Length: 189
Image 1 (tube, rainbow, N blue to C red):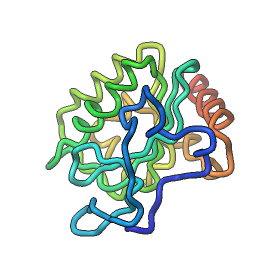
Image 2: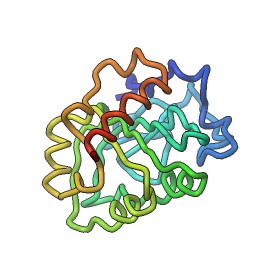
Image 3: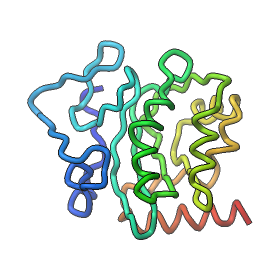
C-alpha cells in the first residue's frame, strides 16, 4: 500500500498545498516518514488526510475559472463504520464549493472497497450544492460501482460506462475535463 502514490504528472500545472484556495494549502509532506495507515498498512505520505480512518484523497487539479476539480481517491470508502462521506464532504467538498467549484471528477481506481449506508444526506446535499454542475466518478472498480448503485448513490454521482477512461493518465487536466464534461452533457441531454 505504501507504494501506491497519487498521480503526480500534473504537479507542474497545479499543487494543492500551494493553492491558497485549496483545503490543503500549506500542508507539508515528509517523504521520509510514513505516518498514515489503513488497517495497519502504511500508505504513501503524499495522500491527504481528511479525518477518515480509511479514506484519503489528493486534489490533482482545480480550475476556479472553469469551476472544476479533479480529485483522486484512495483507500476504503466506508460510510457504514466511519461515515467517510461526511469527512470528505466537510473537509474537501464544502471548501471547494465555497470557492465556486461545481464540477467534480473523482478518480476511483484506488478505492479498494465501498461500504454504504442507507443515509444519503451528504450525497444529496452535495448534489444540490453543485446546481448547474455535476459529480462524475471515473474508473471506480466494478464491485465499488455496484455497491454505489446498490445504495442508490448513482442518482447523485454519474459513474460507469463511458466514464471509465483508461487513458486519463496520458492526458493533461484540461482535455481530460473537456472529455468528461462532454460525456456528462450527453448523459444529461
